[in-house]
Image (cartoon, rainbow, N blue to C red; front, side, top):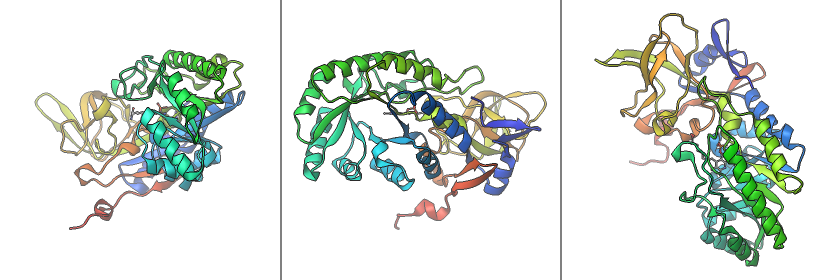
Length: 415
Ligand code: LLP
């Protein structure tokens, strides 16, 4: 699928809208998202899964902007949430509670109560203790929880250790071998209906093989539970499909992965749920930043830009690589430079030892593939107001989150 960010007559555009015009109106740094890019990727999931009973639950954590949630909600997308705050956002954006699944390793009784009262579809339960809490909250509200246990299928997702989740010594899920006993307990508890099996083995997975290995294990477990008389109706396969961050990589085709999933789920008639985050939004977002200055140390060249680790933490936190390209194509010899922000940390960088085209103060750069886990992970570190977010659609653009003001920085604080 083509990136929404393409050069036209030497100018980088998002769906044909020049990024320079967005920077001129909204300032920098600013996140820019393509509505079309997001919808195309959602439809890539929808088109294949339409062949079977299914629910696509976009993982809100990847990008929780209301406009993006609203766009997906209006297209019939469901949502995977991991906190009451995310539920609040989805409901505010017009999401259908009946298409919401609540994941996450630590839910409070208050969060469970809020979600049950709103009538969400189901909960992915991650521990014995949580099962007990779910039952007691459900009983106190006179409701029944539709429950899946998140099992840990012990497959190696072959991704960055911080975003791999499906191995035996990770905090997530229940060992798949111990799951049958927990299902038995779930079935015996008041207020609990064990209707699904869920898993999520990690994120940024470029080779679907481990994802499919997990599917086989989860289908086996579901069939075993059905034979034991449990009312299992759905499989939640989590998210995890990766995207290309470098020119050498290729984004795995969503359709190919899902066709294999359908083959493995076979004739089971189980509803297949998926929780994609990154593969829906990553490639549809860029962070626009301006060059403030260049600086040379004895051994290094630095390009200092106005975006920093507080705006996009992925390079600092996961050594993640993001392409950085000039908004106005520039010709001339490349140089090796670190692209760094103004934050007072050596770990504040967007790129290290990167071959960069000639740039000068005032030039605009675009940090690509920043639509997922970008703004959501941003902070006010160094008292930097969080940046604006812009959505491009229908040949034009609009601000969908205004840049924070200094007053926003101190909201809620007292002397
Ligand atoms: N479902 C569950 C239960 C998850 O924990 C996650 C992501 C997803 C779905 C969505 O996974 P995706 O399709 O986006 O891979 N901040 C990291 C990624 C953390 C992923 C956490 N869980 C990064 O920037 O790479």
